[in-house]
Length: 251
Image 1 (cartoon, one colour):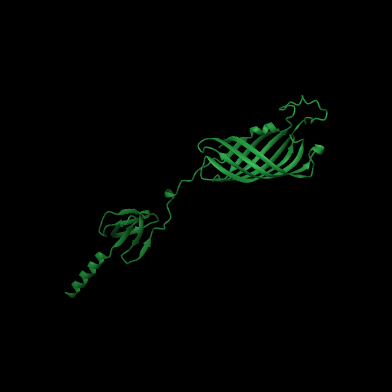
Image 2: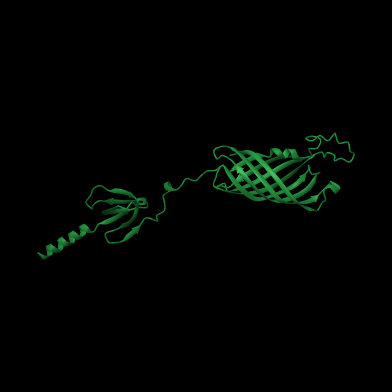
């Protein structure tokens, strides 16, 4: 009789020895855990049940087995399908500076953005000419000592690095260094380089191809050579400022 009582007690304990699933919504389910994979828990309501449930681990807070061991799922990494979508930005832009023509420059600008669109590397190239006599009529000046038009063209190149900040995608503030080197025919054919800090704004609808930049620069220019005589002294540095507007397309 005593043996039968002991067997009955062990059977009762085995019935109470169930696994427990604690859900994130506060629910608790008792039953039998068949197995645990990387993403789901295979679970039965009882060890004699035919139906096996597949419960995503992302729905669970923790698992307590019949031995009292606890397994926490709250810190499990999200699966690939749950990762936030990565924004795809257009990373190339090609533009011109239309108002620079008035100062003897035909400028083409290419900009390459980083994947997150937070930094832009700008490569400008300007064809310079003297607009006197072509854009500006100097025939009314009869003074023999008047400035004569310089013939021919030359080039100015450089590099900008724009650091973009702000949450709005349609308009972003940017700041960064601006470097130029070349020969400016509008300034009487001087050869020089300039270093500036540039501040500006980028305007662009993320769904459209048009892009615009408006910027202000301040720094200095170093004159390397000057054929202008006493008008511009060579081997000198001067304060230098600029206002730039660029319009173009991005892809």
